[in-house]
Image (cartoon, rainbow, N blue to C red; front, side, top):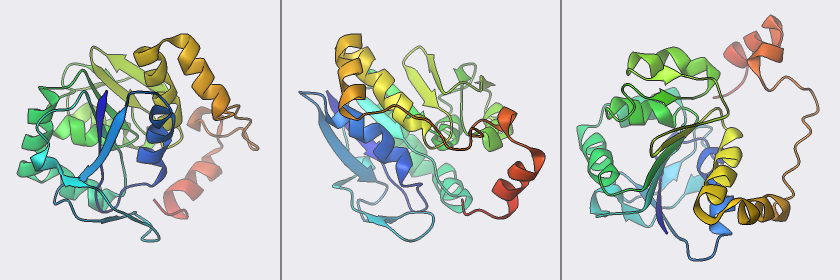
Length: 210
């Protein structure tokens, strides 16, 4: 399976990597990282540089296209680029699976690919997703036909594992989960906004980066 992972300035580091890591463990996968220009991209916190191998406009076809999320500025630049949106739509016509992590769903939405479909994203961005005609589910991973979307940041790992199971079967998907020792026990238990106090949500909105 040939997989293209899109990168952009402002991307959240774990968004592409959380999906890439489990998929890269499957045999017979070929994963390329691409950006709009083919040049390196800085993460939203500006601490990390990621180097793709090609420009998305030069990708003719792939089996899977993955769009991660990131900073507000980076997302706006992506959503405002007609050339990028056209490339995404063109490549989507060749894919078996088109997927997003976190607010990457907004880029898919701006490209017109989620209209009338169920989808998920980071809880802070759900209203924007609805603006693009999608039906927000709030689930960790949502599948609607060939479109797979996942919630905020860490849900990308869940997406990657779910895709492994979809591609190679539950036994192999479970083996990848075991190889990664993915057995989360979050120390605070507030990863879902329904379990978080208003004060903790305020810290997310006003104090934290990203």
